[in-house]
Length: 371
Image 1 (cartoon, rainbow, N blue to C red):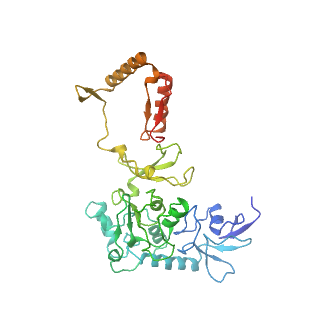
Image 2: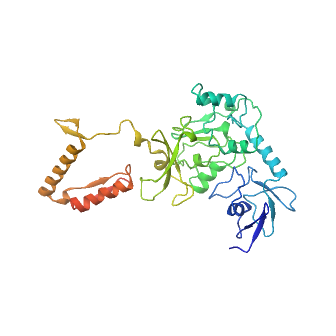
Image 3: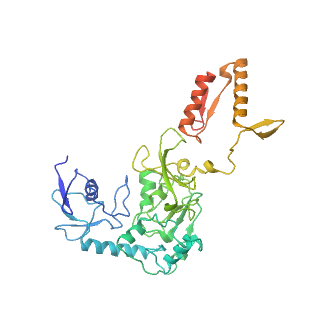
């Protein structure tokens, strides 16, 4: 236990040298809202939402990048703090096209949302991340609404050149989390943007540096960066999350599968655990559509006279066992080679190689990820 401590909302919070006020607050379960803060990246404090009141300080300080100091007395929800947050949230809501039911810049959003739920409206009239937006959550928490703005979508058009990601400048709040995720976490340097600058920074998302990992999507706190395939097609309350291990390689990245109607509709990284701590590659994040693809085979096929016919599992397995046995007896076990796939589970790959070694008696085993 650290010998250093600060007082937050009347509670003692221990901290280690170099930790911030935000770090200390988290240790004792006190939530300080943030928008620009991103784990595993250097805090900037550019959004100002994490402002707190420190006794004796001339002004509010940002908790994410202010080091904790022995004896500090801090209030996280004082009237001064709440007023500052409300002002900042209102400014952000009014900076672009944040047209959801709570933080809408125009009128009638709630009515349009109700119509959408009942199947009477166009989904594209609402934010693509309605219900999964950190700015919306804060607007609801502090009961803030933005002001009408003159057609921001015309000033900042959507950028859809990237095969996986839609960049909507009209919804950007300039927090810089996408740039930090790309440049500091994934170290791809594909986003040339400084937090706090104008939202229309260089964001090509289709140049030679972008590896389509989607780290920026997971980092974006609003609807400025959205996965193309999931945009306007799924809402968070329609899905359940199932944790699993990515099978594309041997790293063991942890995934959240977002399931709707027994189909995977989206994949995100599990941020709380290693080895990936939320990061994924292009395959892990976007390469899941084969699971429920309409062209996927659901019944065994046996080829006769140059054409395939459907067969029962018993017939197909009997035929395969017979053929494998004949080849092994005639040519030996090393006449076989087994290729396994990243598109099946790790458990299935284990069974396949075990079958090759224990039943067929060959070590000629390889995997598409290694190829």
